[in-house]
Image (cartoon, rainbow, N blue to C red):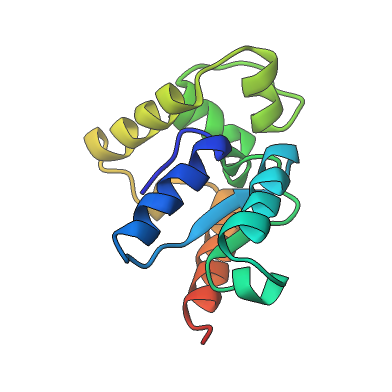
Length: 143
């Protein structure tokens, strides 16, 4: 279940727990992501990091989920414009006051309407997305 920001993740997780549904959370390596991780550890999955290991995937080195896209693909498929970006995609979003939910919606629309496949993305994006899926697969295979 997607969340528009890290702060709402705990609410969604509480719903999933209440409905006794399995879930996994993917958090960026930023202040908000670390805060949500601490809230999970303290309030929901009391105990050690091991208790959280099967529920939370931390994207070490990524300030935001949008940073898994290369700058080229971010401009092409998320922003839909040619601009010079000299910072992380997540920093560009912040410094320009852009709406992450709107950008995510635009990205999904681009994928759907243009029938984008792996071949449409550059090697950097393919590698990073592959790394993310391998990480999630490893977490899913944990006991």
